Amino acid sequence: MIDKKRTVSTRGAKKTREPKKPAQTLIPVQFVTQAQKAPKGEPRYRDPANPFNTWSGRGKRPDWLRAYLEQGAQLSDFEI
Image (tube, rainbow, N blue to C red):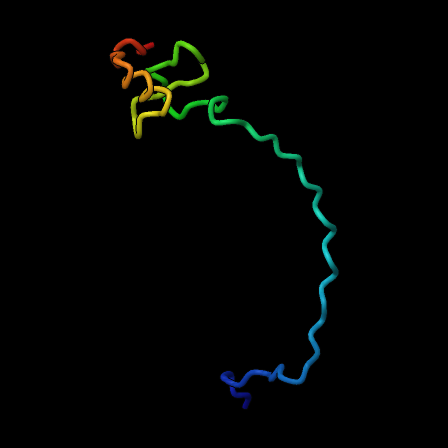
């Protein structure tokens, strides 16, 4: 009878190499500045000097908005 628990030893066997895969061609990446990215979520506030600067009202206030608020502007001045 054959014992089902026994396995064949591969200790001395040579490993076969798989053929190398062809190198994948890389797609060039275009870098986009933060101001040109599409905002996540609907924007609620917009920079009057640069319309690409928007803020959804969630998370940390952007630097451009903080600069306006420090100069005395109100948050409601930037609502869309």
